[in-house]
Length: 261
Figure 1 (spheres, rainbow, N blue to C red):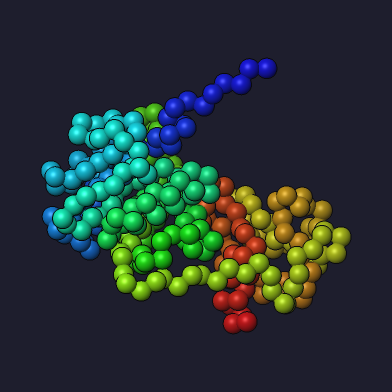
Figure 2: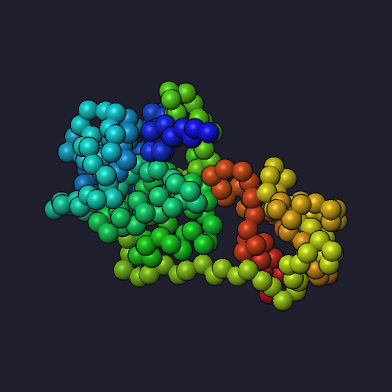
């Protein structure tokens, strides 16, 4: 059996931002900050969607640049030297479970005062946000429109958000992540009172079909089914860059928010 290597554009996460989307998001950035007051940097510029909009002294980097003026370099190895404060804006590669996006954010955080990036929706998960440099505080977030990217010159949809963060002297509080609650227990299908669909288009559906697969469902023992049916799982399940899914900590968090315990 021959195993074919992945194409370079897949390996490098080369999903470029559509120009009209970049223009819209750059406009949002301008509502908060004056680009002329900063040394602007596009960290993984690709086709230069943001770089084209920036002041002429701006910097852009990419390991495989597709637009004139972009420097061939891995941003994760770049040290920015500027007399002005640095603002990083762009669309970094996401990686599995936002792993590369987090690395880009934290490398930018070592040098920047402002970070404005397109990020996978999974960045909203407490466990992932807690990995971001705590000196940065979120001041704006919006959902990125469908088909906002180009892959092999064709529109491509990846669930994403645009976030703007600013550096402050005080550390951001970590979000509490809990995997258990005293009101119920995670259990097996044989001992469960009901189930919650974990993954798929109907993630968050509460039901009593206990023959469902444990790989796609959580099974719960406890007298909390009416409360679980009131929780807004649908919105949280979309905090992913792929197929809708729920984590145990997200279920616990929603339950605590509703019940206050």
